[in-house]
Length: 379
Image (cartoon, rainbow, N blue to C red):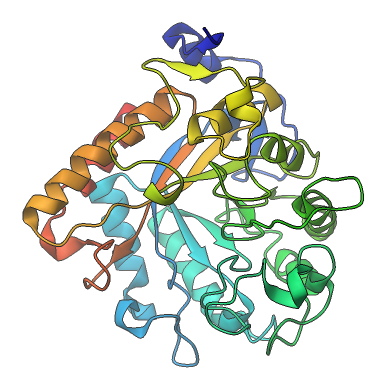
């Protein structure tokens, strides 16, 4: 029988209430999110959260990824405030790609998101580029893993991609410098769902050197904010199992990110790969394989001593019964993830209109908002 690590409630409580907090990175002033070991910290106190994705928050008249889901800029603060007050949301993840900022020449759209979030008391997790190739500067539907002949993560990110005016490396430096003094931003996520089959000369995932280089660029421009790569893990190529460990075992990556989707997991399982109240051993064959489930990412993050954030969890629903089913499944997932030590959990995704079945629409009184509210109260 495989050795498994117990998820002891007492240990989790001790981690959340420890009085000795040493910031390891993101040494910003008052109000910035920093980290202490496996905890996120704000002003000396542990910071845990639930929240939502609102990927098109920075949409403008100039650019919107999916106009049907766009929320007008003058409504953002009211939407953020409703999410905070009615669903316990304290973090919103959104796209801050070059398409939204004219490759760093016009930050006004992102500025509006930051201002609205600040006024509503919500923190932001901006993402700088899209792994699957949506809403970005390349050909629609062409993933970064396919770009530049499959060499984007080893070399292509150093040059402008598609119709971008800046390389991702230069853009990351510019946007980090622009917002370095803004505590509303929780941290920087370099990629949405980075994955690749490319290996370097040492046989490592190309994401290892990519993340190491780009995180160093961002930290040099902005010493106040945390940085993560941004991955699904859980079977995604180049970002799972032993690769996941090697990627996130870098000083420049301050916290770990995973996604919980049926593609690399299961809607019906609360924490795919976990057995009841236990995580698999991080060094087990299951957790070093290229198909390691999401529970292995939790175990590896614990071994690395870094906070873990579930950046996306989406379940489709098209009617009231489906929305209740989704809420029940997400309740199990959020509860399991937080019990396993997750620093935060973000569901996919908030919208004011139904577009693709994954939307959490305020007007429908989606019961998932209640799930988030109760989870937030427990934190």
